[in-house]
Image (tube, rainbow, N blue to C red; front, side, top):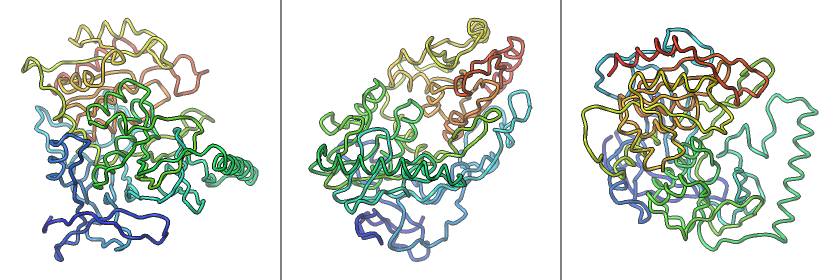
Length: 461
């Protein structure tokens, strides 16, 4: 980009109840938006300084250049993050990793070369990412995305629209719309009651970061919201976020967010803040049919700003204790009480062990230990689950190998791997019991097929 970027500033949007953080470039020849990243006292200086040198705007997840780079945005609504695209064309990737063997799998065939309907190349354009500041606005301290302005208007545009409590389902029948309207009337009645009798007021600015509690959704959605606020240059007085799980508390400690500035989640508590800071939530969904008659939402893409965050985050980790030229190969097991497991787990673990894999239960490790483990790994393998989100911490060119049940093929680990420049392989196992919901499917892995599958990643080391 040409020219120096000026500091971010506030301007009034068309809705006077909120302000939108903006940034602008000085260069007239190259009207590309470029934001200024201000070092935050609550984050480590090296991360903030590194961020000032990055160029995460006007780019795509796996493409080298945004298709609307020369588009001039409305001067009253310039987004904090330019629109992102996702294309799975590995020939146009911006990630220039030096790999021992060329890796190309445009159509996302499995490790045996078979095609599966849930794995296909597509382009997805993210909504523009805004950080808005609403004066005297309301929100709930639970995992909902309900934001209500001072004038009592529900904000939906920055939310995960298909799952928002105040969003009517598209294409639904009249009866379904009437039912949803009744539910919304109940929500409004609850809001007005709590506003009168059970309102919790916050004197100062409050950042809304609380929509995700699961390990994967925390590392992607909550962190993406936090990164938007960090890039905006705002310094909230308080953060509304989850800290019940050890990995959540450890993340905030690493990022040096003081405990005194964290408001924990509390179901059904209504909060009114002097200034409510709301990033754009990135949980964009599509509705898919996993099995006949069973539909559910599935994430479509991840924004590029997560790539820069986790590359900066790696600098906050302790250096390797004993540098070695031989990378680790890790197979992640799942807890015994998990709702998804391998039916022949001992047989599968034995096969991985014969190929030199360490068998590790990630739940027994701290966040820092999991991050260091992933950083030191050449291959990270597991049955589909949140443990594969540790791909965020892997080095460029490493390998992620995922085992799926027969019907449930959620793409989150694949997105994590591709976003961080990793090579991604998968195989689909068999599901013998289809009575549970697809999200709870277990898998049987044929040992001979697994042995054959494990030979392919070895050729890339």
